[in-house]
View 1 (cartoon, rainbow over the protein chains, first blue to last red):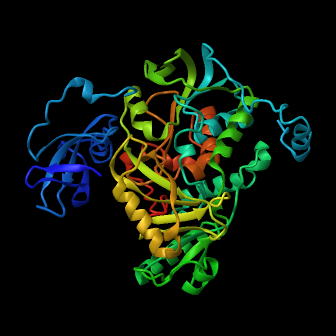
View 2: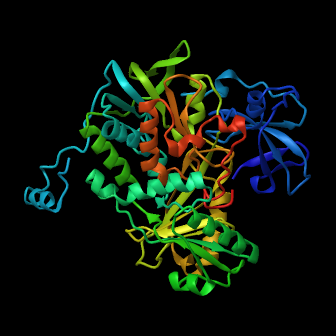
View 3: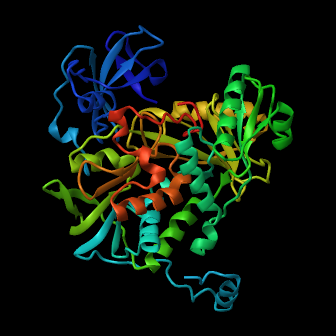
Length: 99
Length: 414
């Protein structure tokens, strides 16, 4: 069971939250090519290591926020509000073997 | 290769079973191969086998970072079925089931295919309408399926609780569906490929791809650089990582899909049973264990272990359907890293890099596809263009918009 610290409500069980996939994805301009649009819609980083992702506190404040979580250990390194910059994490935390 | 028979069993029994040969050769990597396949799971091994058998390409290496069949091939719940929805999916997955039906003979290895039927349940009037549409689509695609009333469901599975929290309104069955033994499938393909001269190299992790002028020329591994004219990626949950080495992105999310088995009991289930809405499926292995699975954990994961919330959801769903199972103990619980695509259809065929091929995005349902996946990828690699059965499964579909949105792929509602 993940323990997720909502930036608004504090630490709660994973069961109160819903997952929203990769965060910090920027929509390309309307003039973008099919390839750029498809990359935006479908392709994901899917890293083995730290993943910056969106969660919503569905059974709490109902607000979206960001989580920096390791996809191998599931350890949560940070949670931060929408619109805030990614936290700086040590480089050796970002990439795991075989990446 | 036809040395597994009743006669050979008898002969070896008289010799206290000391005469058996190793099923495949242990090898060290050569400098160069015609084809290198990354990943010695079911798909990689089957691809090597059909390259040798159907296309006479035998200078092949299958590289495996761990041990053969130790990833999703050894972690799935062995469901073998072709009850898909769209014509492209039905054609491909039914080809796979047809190959499964002859696989024990073809590979001289008992894969223990048991066509006990796969039963899909509906829990509301609307879901029953959806099931009728699904079952009829399957029939239009020349695959067997039969719609069942609640009484017919009860006749098939007498232990089922029709008046559960979400009462059962009926279902449908594909009688040719069922289970087979996943380790046997991996070992049988490995043995047959090895017999053709394919090198299976375990404990050999690919750490980089060598690409020159847009064409792949070899791989860097933990056991040195190996040259290859053609290279194929079949690494399931690590598809994104291999694609990144090759310099392109894929629409894949890796997630943990868990499964579990109970202690063994006498035969009590007749079918492989599945409920899309309450998110659980259960069957009984030949050893008597109940094999239970459900949906994938909701977040990205490479951990190969499942979380408690999904475990609880799956178990409570199964107990609602079969209250009598509540006295059983679970023996094991595990997870595989599944590579899920946005339309739950696999990604097969060519890549943006010349001579580099991909078979991935199998998500929660790659096991049943192993024979046809191997056969069509072998054709694709040998001819450098996609096999007709997988023309629609290429990476390009995400750009053109021709997605094959296969809700039946996972069998459960994700």
